[in-house]
Amino acid sequence: MSLRLSIGLLCVAASVGPGASHANAWTTECKERRCGISINVNDESQKQRLLTLAMLVNKDGSDPAILLTTPLGAALEPGVRLIVGQRELGLKFKVCYPDGCQAHASLAPADLVEFRGAANIDVRFFVQNNDKPLSAKIDIAGLSEAIDKATK
Image 1 (tube, rainbow, N blue to C red):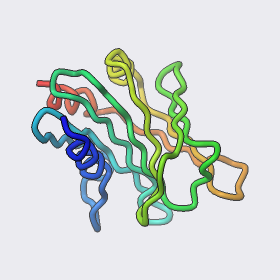
Image 2 (image 1 turned 90 degrees about the vertical axis):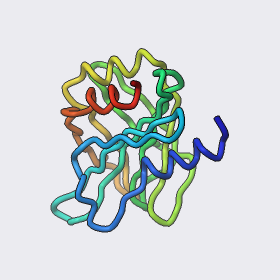
Image 3 (image 1 turned 60 degrees about the horizontal axis):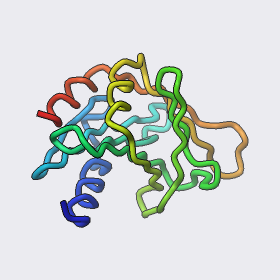
Image 4 (image 1 turned 180 degrees about the horizontal axis):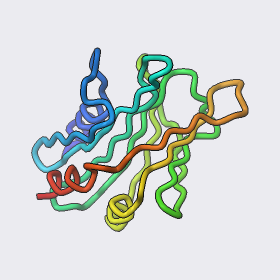
């Protein structure tokens, strides 16, 4: 798979359009042999996107990765923490674009099983100059179906 196609899928999986109606629902989009599974989480009090969580995986279930996009203003040095069941994953921010900052990491195929079995995914990150983390619990309802769709 070309690097350009992988980057394109990262952008597709993490993009948020105006008035995104699929907030809080898992979506799957595939191109050739690679699929993106994503969910947008909105901050209802601010009426804006809080984060986008995307998983990328080959259709055969190999080479999974995770990408998280936060709004600009996230504190870069501490990164992002994902708590999945009893496991905590640390993601480092890699780049910021005008629509947000992205943290990503490679996963093992067994990690997808752990994501399926968790009650939720807890995402935590800090906003610049604030020592209290922002936290969002993402419901995994529909994630197993989205992974099945991506890997079949």
